[in-house]
Image 1 (cartoon, rainbow, N blue to C red):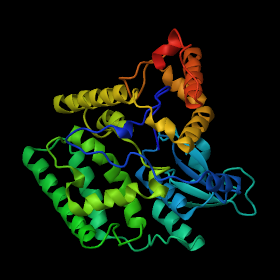
Image 2: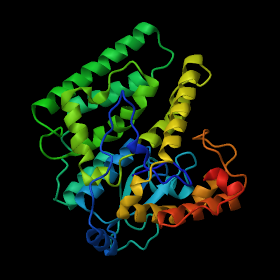
Image 3: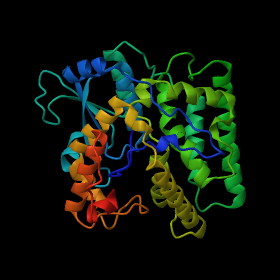
Length: 368
C-alpha cells in the first residue's frame, strides 16, 4: 500500500472511515511468505520507470499489470518535477511510464535493453510476452474513456460559470450511469469475471476520487452508491495484484488533495483556497486517528515490507521529514534537522520490529 511520507505512523489510514462514506477493504489479500521469497529470488526480466510519488495514473495501470501477471521486475523512480537528463534522453516523449526489457544486451545501464513507452503499448507488449491473465489493451471500452474524460473535466473545472459546472456534472453522472449499467449487468469487472486493461484504466482515477470527491465536491453522491460500481470496488479490493501492492489509502489521497488543487486549480481563488484548507484539515484528522491504530502491526508480511521500504528510502524520507517548506502535507510537523529525522526513522523501524520508540526525545519526537 502506498503511503505519503510519515516518519512514525504505525496505523493504517485506510482503516478510518466517516459515517457518510463506508470503509473499503481494510486488509489487503495476503500473499504467502514462500511465494514472496520465491519471486524475490527470481531474476528481473524488465525495469519499470515510473513516477516517484505514485500519482501517475498511466504508471499505475502498468504497475497493476506487472503484479497481475506475476512479472519479476526492477523499478527506477523518476521525479516528474525535475526529470533527470538521462531519462529525457532515454524516452523520446520524456513521459512515464516506460519499461526496458532485460535483453541479452542489457547490462544494468538505462538504454542498454529494449524500451517500450506509452502505457497502452506497454500493456500490449506484456500481453504478447506473458499470455497469463490477458489484458486486452488493444480493445478499449468506450464507457471507460467517457468516465475518465468527464471526471477530470468536472472535478478540476476552473474559471467556469455555474451553468458550465452544472453541465460538466451532468456529463460525468451520465458517464458513470452508463459504466454502472455495464458493471451491474455483468461484472464485477468491466469485461466480466476477469480484470482487464479496462479496469486498470479506471482504477487510478476511481481510487483517488473515491476519497477526494467528498472533500472537493461534498454534495456529489458517493461513487460506490451505484450498484455496479459498488461490485467493482469490492472486486478490485479483493484483487491482490492491486490491493496488496498498488492501491493507495485514504490518508494518502486525502493528504495530496490540496496539492492537486494547487496544480490543477487556482489557489488564489477563494473557493479553491477553502477546499485546500478543508483537505489539509481532513488529512490532519485522519493522521491523528491513525496514530492510535496498531492493528496493521498484526500483518507480518506488510510490516516486513514497510520496514524494508523505509530502510531503503530513509534518505529521501529524512529529507522530507526535515523539510521546512514542504510541497505536501503542511499539517505534518517536521524535524529541524536531518539528524532528528534519522532518529525518528530509527524509532519507526524499532516499532515495526516489535520494539519501542519510548526513548525518542527532542527534535526526533516532533516527526514521530
